[in-house]
Amino acid sequence: MPNEEVTDLLIAYGEGDADALGQLVPLLYDDLRRLAHYQLSKGRRGATLDTTALVHETYLKLVDQTKVDAANRAHFLAIAARAMRQVLVDYARAKYALKRGEGRRPVVLDKLQLGVREQVEFLLALDTALDRLRKANSRLAAVFECRYFGGMTDQETADSLGVARRTTQRDWMKSKAWRRTELER
Image (tube, rainbow, N blue to C red):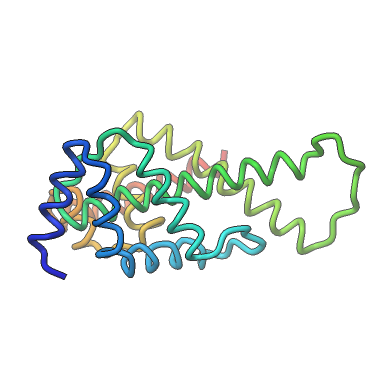
């Protein structure tokens, strides 16, 4: 795929051309599927979305945004990884709401269902912690999203954020420690 074509489409998309996203996604579809597969492979048993569905839901989320300013391919994939996380969190919230009742009769939970519930609760707690981290230090949150949710390498993360590789390595260590502290609360 020609990088110039991707760059031109990113510029057009950043300027509000919604059609550019429709042309961009097929060019980056394999990368988006890799991101989705990575996110879904992180032990989320019982997920209602598969790789293809997550990519498509992410596309719909990106189409709804009025303007996305992605500087390059890596930056766009970081934005897509964040959108995927948001899709998964939305699905987890909906699933958690269903598990809490919504007018249904109580059901005895087996071990598998408890595992799913714990995973949903972990994802929701992680989302809340990331929101707090973003308010305290947006770059640490961005590095965490790229690495944890996007499966990006140090260099890919650095490229997407426009910082040095060593900076992303330090930020990754800090953000993992912060996440551990937050989730132990």
